[in-house]
Image (cartoon, rainbow, N blue to C red; front, top):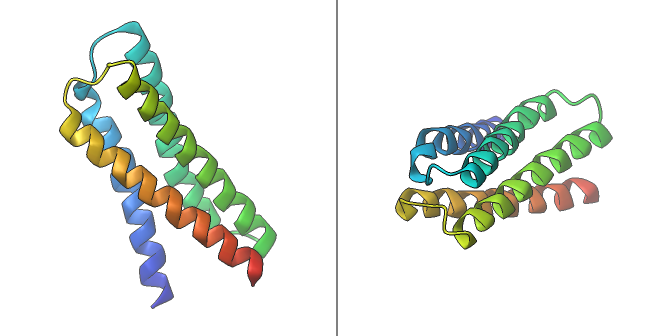
Length: 120
């Protein structure tokens, strides 16, 4: 049962990262949006990749450390998307808002998971 949850989270992270890449055209073609998009792709994919590493952590401490990296990258993605919206650099807000919502949910999941892991 636990393996399925891990797989579902990994699947969500991969889907989130892929959606960021696929929906890149939702942004206006400007220097600032292109700069932020490149960073958004790096941070969102980093969360997925680091979660993959966390699955083979060598210790509880190593697992928590890698999970914290994932959380850090997700929070960076979250702030990046807020900047893009605030700077009015998003053309198509429908898909973009879905990505923002998913990022917020992932941040909440990782925050809870890290707190739980620290208690065990």
